[in-house]
Image 1: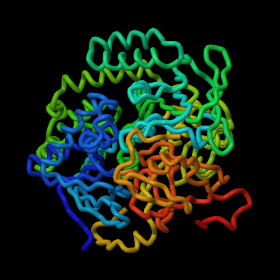
Image 2: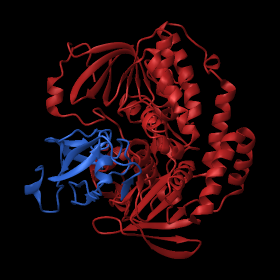
Image 3: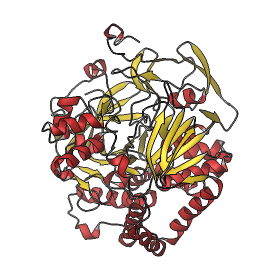
Image 4: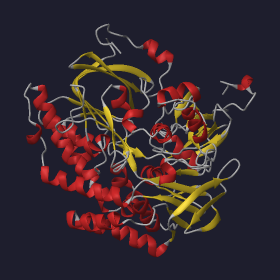
Length: 473
Length: 103
């Protein structure tokens, strides 16, 4: 076991929840090791915030005041004494003999196992899949991807841009682009006509958290003043041979075709559950957020005794609430390590604040529902599984043949069996099968996720020295 | 497709399929290639369709490339290094099994 490292708690992810949980643990004298796939702490929301603050002050103005707040979390992490490993992917969580866990990581091309008494998954969110004809073409990417390029390398799109979908991030990014001196040609808003419930949700949200709501409404007002917005967009298609050259869509019963160089899509975010699923934590379908979430008791306790999930990975709550939850989960884990049982009621650090964030989130979920056409792509030609190029029509065909679940669907079509392991098609494939059979999502279930959840080579595995006690997966 | 807001400081040279590209020391491989106007990063093993980064946060695997001889690396998660050699995966068109697996 020469390659092994041991620690008290492993924290996966260095966004608001992960940074806060690790800081709080380390400040309490618990050995905490943060494993981050990226090169600097911050997660996606505060991506690269240290370097932008130090070296790119012009970009700091573009990214806005909320982004600056990330610096405090990063500084706290550095001064807390928690260990931080950048550029580190986790490919396995195996039970050694619970409560001892073995966490398989790959760093600098080398694979190793880390022993820990507890693991906190703060793996954050990812953008909801948005399948539509042509979404695999180079030149189509997510709004989050474009924003990551702005934060990490100061890149802004060039040429003619269209932005499609809905959600707060879409308007935030476009407002940042306008500040950076770049205006998209058009925004294609895919929301249906606002329901009474959606309108009421805005009023509710205004009373719950006026500051956040005014900030968000400010982005929308600014964006709508500067950029043409097409409402109630349907039948979005991206066209081109080797790369995107045009888009077509219907808006308010009129057909449009635009020549564009880049199409950015976004339809909200969903929890990144792959690691928790591969660790065997139970998950269920969240009807309101329309995504899979881990079963949680207390603050972050999953169905596995030594695994906690916190932040957006446990259900979308946003950056500010993730900080509060990170603090609370650290306390829960410390109590757990000390062998104390905490009651669920006493766990939350700021119960009133967290409830406020959850209420705001519910309003946002009602105001920005996922587009029906992205959830259940009506066109059979639409590629659902980007890796194996499996279409919605093929999923419907095998469902009609009697396939009742996504895992059986793999055997029929290879959907979800490419390198992304279903991250970009898992929700869609389950939804299509559930729709066909008239079943609930929990009845249909999700792909079974197995390690390694990140690519490692046979050679790397062969170099790993395995302790017979540490490896039972 | 993308341009830099700032002038290139701290430049490093990387190679994409024998083309020299100027990048910034902190860039991810994906960011550097996009800033250099590379539209197609590689091709799918099923139909040979072109692909480029979609999510930029390590989930979509559409940015897989070969870096210094190691295949299937996520370009969005690897930081550039001076002299780095990047090649795209050729994918596999229908009936093109002979090319499968070759870089």
